[in-house]
Image (cartoon, rainbow, N blue to C red):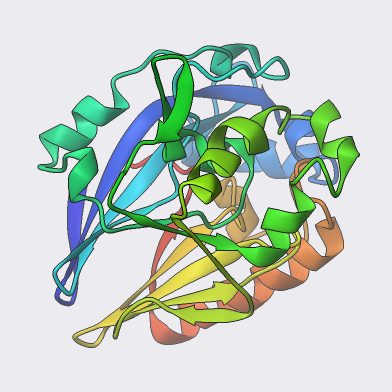
Length: 274
């Protein structure tokens, strides 16, 4: 866990897990191997291991802004049936304990922001209680992109049940919606005076980022526009998990250019902070 200030806003990293995901060539099909080879000294050991596996963190950004406690993305979750990813299948980690270390109980959370509805960004939306999936954060509003809400619903798109998001809508989205805690949004959504949600499609149809401006400082909660620092230089290369790799590249270039222009702190969803 580490903490930083952006103007008057406090940002704390809550790490669920960190470890290898998959080989570079599988994760980034169009990225030339020479790029990995030439930048190994910058990538190892935080972002790439000696066997050529990309390392990634599953984590949440805990944001304290204008008196509210906000979580940006909720990682993988416990007890979830995830047949596509062995390491996530029926996981059991002390994520809530790490939130408690940061001074946050589930009932303290005012707002949950899911930048998109991939399985590794929505897991702690719910927890298992007496055999039922219930909202983990009972007093929170959950902000979800409307486009992703409809896209990842198996009733609208049966194909999603055959991929990495299998079971995710049923156990991590539908129960929160049934509880009346979901607020859907499109295009942009103003969270408060300093926090703005903005559509950033490509990785998923409804993928979004959060822009923060406070006291003259700026930050970009970048979601999954970046999965490795190598993409900061090689911006046209998208991950194998991007629904529209070309659009994801356009979005990446646009937002990284904005971050450079305004000197914004870049806070991607999966880069390690150790």
